[in-house]
Amino acid sequence: MPDIKAEQGEHILTLWQGAWIAALITGVITWALIIGVPLWFRRRRDDEVPVQTRYNLPIEIFYTIFPVIMVIAFFSQTVRVQNVALEMDPEPDVVVTVVGQKWSWTFNYPDTEAAGGKNVFTSGDGDEFPQLVIPVDQTVEFQLYSPDVIHNFGIPAFAMRMDVIPGNDNAFQVKPTETGTYDGKCYELCGAYHSRMLFTVKVVTEAEYQDYLAGLAQNPDNVSEAPVLGGEYSRNLINPDEEESE
Image (cartoon, rainbow, N blue to C red; front, top):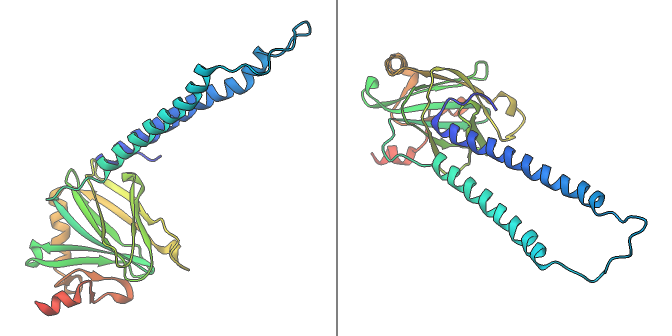
């Protein structure tokens, strides 16, 4: 796995490492029994034929109950880490509305102070991959939308990803722990140009983040009343009915 740069990802990394250790221990014990038992208890030339109807109740109980205990332990640990990784702070520091569309990404920053409370956004144009900019050491919530097919928004350095499903609003949060530039991609085969659905993630300081938003707000083409769909959908609002009602 890559070096993890988010708090949530650290829990997932620990689970991943623990699963490999448990699998190794289980494998060693299993192969030791498979290979060792026939060697240790093989019949010698002068041995009589053993009783064929004998059974060992304690051993039978052990090899029935112990695997069940193992499954329960692995499952409970997985659920615990999943709950921690997907725990949602009701008041995140930053909200980014992520739109996955064929075949790029749009990153919306709603209620941007530098834009007078309006939405600022950046979108891939097919020639250049879009860049997602977020602040370090702050809880960032990604709200995921798709206008067409199922995509999957993922950032390997955070060890987090989630499906982007039309008609189903998904979301997750991360807290980046280190500044830097990281790769992001779509993890769901979504059509002919799925391979174009790449993006970069730039984790910056709070001051740099505010400067970035201010820079977007200076360009009218990057400002809208509400989050928008990118690419060929670039000026369509995500919630046009709500806009009309306002």
